[in-house]
Image (tube, rainbow, N blue to C red; front, side, top):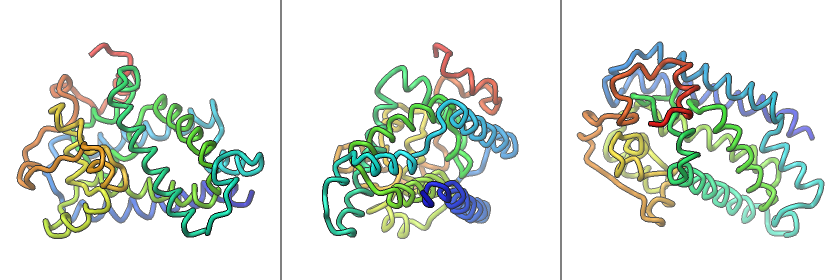
Length: 265
């Protein structure tokens, strides 16, 4: 129960620490020249994140850690019936939870009604650390249902779920950053985890490119399932980001983003 009480503070602390670090780093070593107002984008992206979390707490005051504790108390889930070594269980849980996030991301692009919601994230015409929190309240709502179902099936410990949540949010901040990594470092890192260049391609206006590189944390899921794509580093400087049908309007308007899932196009 202590883990559940402290989880929000621990998660927010890690989030702020990682966010400030990569926000500073991308300001020092930007990958692309920003063409959209940074201030307006940040206000909109963080406002949407705040609305999403307030909405979730009012409608469904649950967290992934709380669901893990509930599963443990009720002896629900695979790993609550196994007595495997802690290290092996920990590695498997992190891998399986990350795989479930990859699957969720693919489904959010393939199922039309979910894509209508997820495209709010893709409407951002630039990419930086703030894009990591740009999600519509309905997507956050659906995500906790999906993640909660996975947790109930797997039965991971609350501590492992908390660890995964920290890894996931930290990875999202890193791979959305407008950060220029030396090619040799990018090549080395992307063998295991998703780099900014790898994920940026997923935000391209070109459908063939945006339907690739779905991974959030580990990069090998895209290679295993054939959704990996790599283009030259120079390509990233000129590629158009966002939604093809919304390149000429102000995608930083908060109300526009909240209503976007209900637009036909």
